[in-house]
Length: 106
Image (cartoon, rainbow, N blue to C red; front, side, top):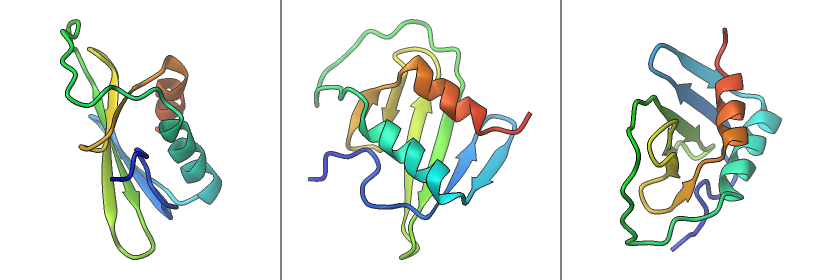
């Protein structure tokens, strides 16, 4: 099983926040975000955590691949602040959360 949160080389990203949907096609921005997610410290499989109050939001990062595959990575802005593709989870850093927020137009 692949242990990357974002395997391979996605071609584009659709970033969904509670109020917006942003399409990112700049290859360097997509690669930078994928690399940052892949560099996060992993949550051990099967671990259970009592997370603090989760007031959201959760960002949906839809990575699009040239073969038409789509990978959803969720990024929780509060609570335990996990980033996950459904198989691999990691702790989201404040810097990466700021990077995600910076991609959303004001």
